[in-house]
Length: 100
Image (tube, rainbow, N blue to C red; front, side, top):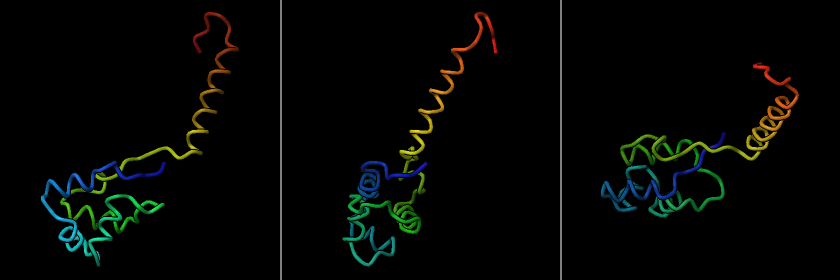
């Protein structure tokens, strides 16, 4: 499993606070509002670090779990499909009326 930011969740919570990006960045201990903006918009190609997520969550008065969601990685999706196919194929060889 991997994680990804919930679309728009950081911005939604910041605006509900209500906080500007500069104030939110200061609360999170970031050096600039631009850093906050990059996290909020998800402009990096990689997920934010755990430390960054913790800082953002604390600045917004929420938990990291409020900001992210679990997602299957491509390898897990392939493994799940392969297991389903194996299970289906195993079921085809049962005698009629068999329960197990």
